[in-house]
Length: 307
Length: 302
Image 1 (tube, helix red, strand yellow):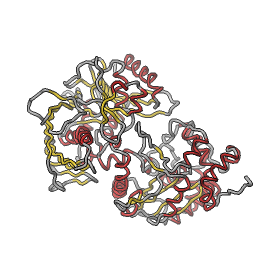
Image 2 (cartoon, chains in turn red, purple):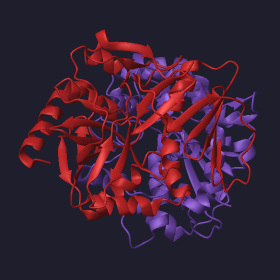
Image 3 (cartoon, rainbow over the protein chains, first blue to last red):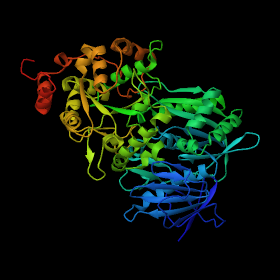
Image 4 (spheres, helix red, strand yellow):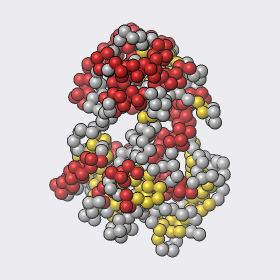
């Protein structure tokens, strides 16, 4: 039994149910296929060997202890070899996260580790490392009427004239139990993302607009930073060098950009985007009690800059 | 290949101070210590950092369970050690070569019987030595309370809790990976009694008393030779007053949001004026034997 999904501008046909993505009725020819099968112990003629991963020109093998081994071929086909005692939700979680991200890297796409919301029809991205609060930031904005475009993968396309667009990642937002409680979202708390973690999918708000399914022009990028608990929120425009650093350091998997020798791709993308897109360091205090004040400042900033 | 030197300590026992001393050695005479610098002995030394783990495994640590992360960390640490020379995480200091790859760890030491590996991947990774920094637990309690933004009694409870951990929140994502501490005395014991890695115990109070001398001596015990001049230079640059002043000017990125200052007091024996007799007694009841073993006074004269 297969299902079809759309994520990051690609159509996925999957034998494995993917609760993290929104299913489609679409029967168009898929860009990506996820099937169950056996994965060999190693990739032939590997050109790069990481700790639990390796790749050759055409294949990428990723092993997750106790969950599954994945074989990605030609940026298109994934064979999923699940561990007999695996939690199926964990398999789905890694498929729609890390595996999808690696496929995008394999396809040579510029892909950032970022969440995104729509502001006046254009995408605003929040970049940063794990646990900085990207998803939480976007969900908080959605409660003020800004629709979530991406939970944590932003696939960019840069047109010939340098104008960038972002594809929706088609995923449900994922929030920790603490965030759900503090933000009063218990009525939208969905299933756990996997057994053993108190992180949940968030159900869409019943009144929320239809999710966008086309790429959206990019308006601005924010590099999320933690300020101290008593510090002020600070939004500071990045200079040229830091703009390039933002793009380089916030690739979905910077280690892969390095291993696949794609630094040039990201440098060129940054250079092409710069005339069209503003980027900022966004220092804000952690703490849910500060969230309203932080969002007020962000909205003021959007009104004042048009960025 | 670099030599890995593990700097182990229960929290608030001088780990950062020691790393700042190392950073000054790295920077040399001319360059001032920037407490927020991306020095290999500062940022990259933190073994509970999510990013290094994610770079090695390509996995999102906020989608792994604590147990899965614990199972992978020794292998990640070994991989990082192998890459240290390539990534520039190691540094030659003094007259020693090859470079030293300094790793900070707050985790208590343990060995997994399943995979036959210890914390830090030290068994198969062949790390050269560990320095265990210890501090009078009565002073640790005061410092821990400030760091956590909690009461001193809560800090004393934490130090007596065998399940205590840093970054152990299960309902949200902490900024670092979980570090299991055990009780304060068990933490000391775990590092001192293990036979997988030579360990050199350094008391915070002794380092305070003769910073240059103790710093140089401890490094010599680990096979790292530095000159007296280098030790003096490091000790002067990392003197507590200077670090506190720097923090006031520039902030310190390793300070948690809850506390007002990271470099707060830097003294020994503050407990005599800050703890009630009942609080001091609770600590001695819980940790007395280890305190005695480390030479901390526990008789009733206090």
